[in-house]
Image (cartoon, rainbow over all chains, first blue to last red; front, side, top):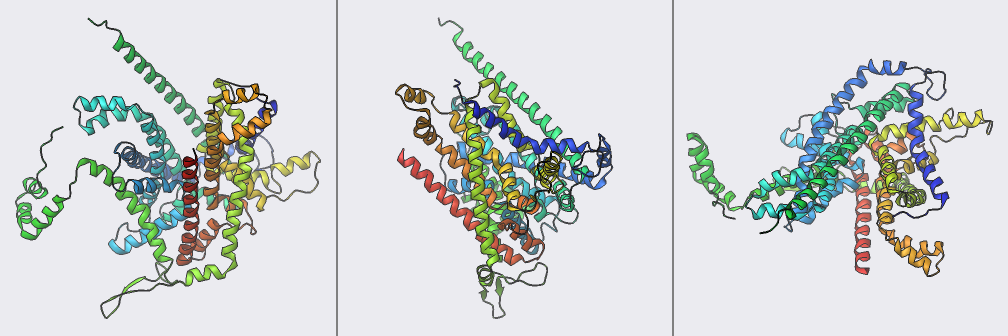
Length: 285
Length: 333
């Protein structure tokens, strides 16, 4: 149901969207600027994209970030889903409140604290048991997994609580073991949440500067760390080009994922309706 | 559901292991230990609970214990640069050295207290500005045509997915003395001297409001969208003026969204590092940046840990307060 709204509100909404998008659009426009001065327009050129593609430091950092993102997002999906299932399906058990607190705390914890504390843990562990030896991509993966699994848990848990419990109960009544119910019934039903959880975890990992700066070692420089060190020195048209590419990839990804998820959701609803209709169709004799 | 009773752990290991393993398992102390272990009823369910529990305990809870520990340690010029808290003295007993010096130092140097207060102030005012900007936006979004709503919501969420660092970087290009805004204003002849905006508190507020606006918008939208619009119609029919209807119906019903949005902006911006570092100047002291500098520039790990502990207690205090508010709201319902 829609209701008439004062026209001033629409103007306010448009201004708000302009505020959200002007910086991004200005980044994109000036990535095509010819001059090295990022803020003075001097003509159209794609030279900064060429320069970007020859910048080995940025390219190798991007490669490392993507690898770290893929691994930590996969781990975060597994662990976050476990947390969500335990919290949504296991009822009450001793330590449930603590687990729920531990799983949501990374969402509100300032990153500088999480980063510092994880680094101190790694140093203490290395002193005590010799693992992990030095800081590397591995320690960044652990940090990102811990941080991102909280987000995955929230996404998956809301999907689980919104799900019709009757389907799982029916499978259990018919004698399926809990693990079978999970893999055959629950997992396919929550798969859209797993996909969005994975994408969210991947983006968080790809975007993180603070945690990575604390826990990385000399060999492991991620893309945000390179961007940060360049940005501190001043504006750089190459960074604008990089930002444009990232916005393009992410924008396309979000739109495509949105369309696919939407379609999957509609197909699922149609299936459910057909299943219900099928139940009623055969006449009782 | 019937299941075969699980074999004792010792037997399971013995049947699976080779001769050497069997010999080992049959050694008396090992057998006692294994049978004790088998007493712990470990089912598949327990393992599912244990795995994330172990991970979070090891990589989230234990680190805070270590931070707390190191905040009581002495600064040393060594690798790692802090003293041990527990010491097995030569006499053979455990001594614990609690060094409160780091906290006394934090309390005595006004820099830290100022940064602490300034962070709270900046986060609070930014959250208020976000609320002011986002409320009308969320209201319009919630009342928009259903066909448009999906697209508009996607536009709200899209900046979330693009790099935070790059979005903050974009503001440097806009706010610089020879940046886009100043060039535009001077080109139009509105000003003839560039307005200094970079490295000021203004830039920090702007950056935080910009970065966290979607966090305010989404909870506001979801609480406004759920609202029963017939309530407003009833008020109108009874002769209530629209503004009064807003104050007595819409605003109280959207209160959960306001509280959620406010804390989603306030808490993370308290510890913000990137925005004050890139947009702020020397006058903007925020606690996240102080911690970063202590750690990376001064290599003062114990001081950084003490700052982290002080920050943590602030965040925890806010979370407890929020829980209390929620409980009170529920009890009132």
